[in-house]
Image 1 (cartoon, helix red, strand yellow):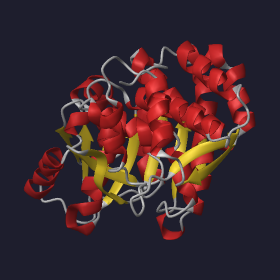
Image 2: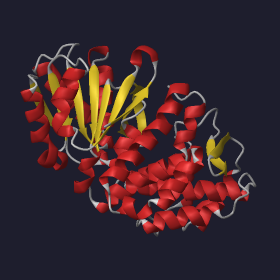
Image 3: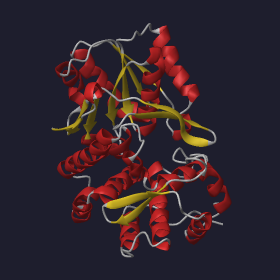
Image 4: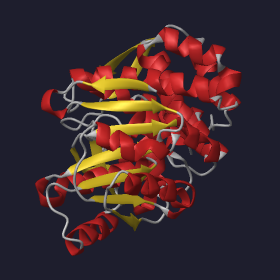
Length: 364
């Protein structure tokens, strides 16, 4: 088991990564002084694999735990579903010493964190992410949110978990698209911050595709260290942390314009990354022309899209870009690569450049 610390003063916490950790959750909670009544939030897909082992582990450790099931899908990361969690907490007389546990992917983690941040003005919560995407990204850093029909994650709060337990053994039940989607965030970390890590991903490509537990534990811990370092420097995204949104500006717009039905999150971000690379090349910010085909090849090898599907409106995407959380004073703040391992934030990208890029990627 590897432990990565996120050092944020009184809000500091550990990320535990390895195999066989989920069935040890009860003892891991005990070791870290977790007390109180527990409500686990999950969905039916995850529950069929991992809910019983988790509840058995908690019961064996002496915890009282109940469950609320949320339907599976991005469209259920909503205020309505948060209300269902609140109802369970109120009806079960959960108090401020109680603990929410998020068992699942990013939707469950974000929704559970949002409920924890707002119930009784804040109760503790623990992340047990079961997808690669959640283990390397959404479970770390305290971003909690629900979606609005006009934009992703527009309603939320920064609220740190008390513990993250990432069992890479859960990858064995991940559908191929889910696993590939998670790898986009892993690749992103190397592209924006760590060339050596990026090269390791290239070198271990076959072991990664085979989901080798030892290699995947190293990969997850590596991404956690990269993201933790950024979060420690800029917890509330007032500066440097914005670079973690590389690829997300157009990615979120693509998710929104397709009603969160067409793309997995990582698939949309992959297209957003390719768009950002093209924009950087067009504006002479990136002088390494080889980085685009290298990224495209990595995405293609994972079965990820490299072109927009037919019928996506460039004008529709452009309108949604201005609802992005990174917009300041009416200007989009783009995260763009200067080189492998280096990015900058720019508000000076002409809209025409963005439209041309979207058109080149297949937009109409």
